[in-house]
Image (cartoon, rainbow, N blue to C red):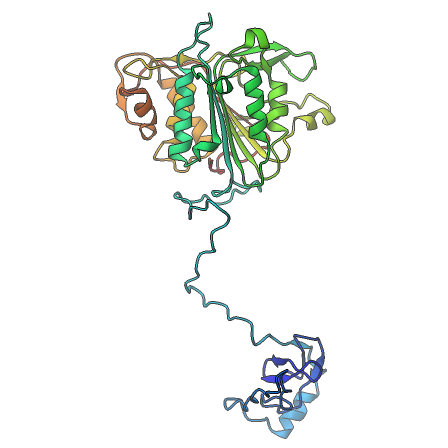
Length: 428
């Protein structure tokens, strides 16, 4: 049923039999005469050019007017509520199941839909990283070449993690910064000053949906805690290449640089393959996979000091290679040609690449890492592996193997929020 508004002359369409209709354009309530068959109440007004649009003919499919008795009975009840008219010029909605084109590209550099299926939103209310969002990474590997504390596998760790981010997860190489002590560029050497400067770069200018990565392979240590925050009375630290002259970087600094600056909608994944690294980011929650529960690391502090350990609103998750009182292995036992790696970094990449868990959850990652570390170690009676999509094999050469003597270190997961680790997918 159509009619013309007597005030603004807009054409309205309403349901048949409505006693009064409210104009969609100006809001005037118009009484519909009984038996109105759908024709305009009067000829439409001329347009600005003097042309008069053709009048609409009566609807030939309209039902005949009801008998007088039925009309009288219909008029007896209270007036029907006002029915809002619809705009006849609004585009029709597509039929269910009809083809709908994809939205146009958003911003420069758009490369189409993501190559991998996007995981369903988690039930904990914290958003997953946007597949098309900003991605930035800082990867640090230090062998301390020429020093008494020299290691062998940390630069290999850094190269393997960089390869994983760029070639498996499709991160732009321009946004992946790697600091190693074999780099001849002084700006890319892992000095204390360069590490802090690049942490500030990593933590700045990140809109919601951003995915960040921080990893450190090298020496970790401990220092005396004079604030009363640490239950064991010790701060956890990482050692830059120039730690003897410039000093270590304590967990309080790491928290201020990486955790407090992680804003709403931003996700930071960290991996620290170093000794004494269990709580190296001072995150408030540590996951206990035996009871499938989170332990509050700062429940002994007053509430106002507990709040100082919160993130800036974003989600921070840290994979560490061992407990605070443990050491981590730098080993060549995982490669037939004796290429050295960090045991935890190797097992982390292997767990991420596990084809039976795609995408893995945080609980499944931790379980795979713990199991493989228990089973792995030196020895020649190993079965050959073809894990991790060839990442370690391609970069380190030789076959990879799991042997029968395990490592004693126990990997940990710490977080800024007590997420559900058994359901939330690991998405970078």
